[in-house]
Length: 236
Image (cartoon, rainbow, N blue to C red; front, side):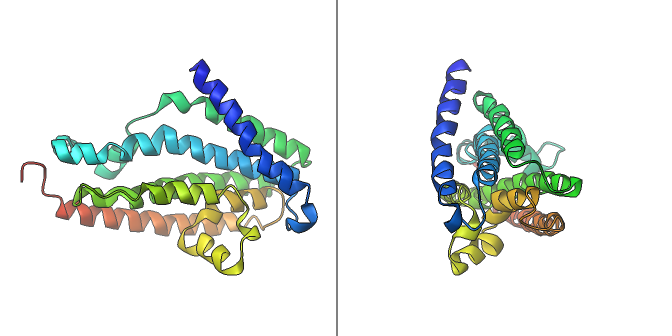
């Protein structure tokens, strides 16, 4: 655990370098100063932690579970199969990342003078929670096809999407920005929570995030159930 914590601290420090560099060119950064960029980085680091604590330890087991037939026993349990299959395992070695992300977030908000209104702070927290759910949903979407195609592996999309979230989506070109907002909702995973916290976007964006998250979760549930209907089991 100590080694993992030291590695996490070093990795967070390295990840902060681009934010510092961009903040030095604030005139070209669309209003993204150092506090805003550090807060966005804290959100990205939180998402990265959750990906390795919750998402990857679970969806990473799906191919082996399908091959060995152990998934059959899981599906027979009187619980929601999607929740159970995607959330039951925790990668505790990355837990220190959560504390580091929280510490960086508090520092960033303090450097930025705090949110403009209490509503902005609440809306930012709601947006972060929506981002966590969207990240989970993206993880499921990139891996659910393994139930019928055991060689399927599109988890690279999840990693690529999260890495794109290290940069404010407003700094990308118009077309790419649209894709990262409404097709692959990277903006709602990292950028929108940061914009809301510092008054760069309306607190009402949290309502948009909630609506988008609800739609995406519904899509995930439908896709999962459809794929379960195609699952034949290891002995078939």
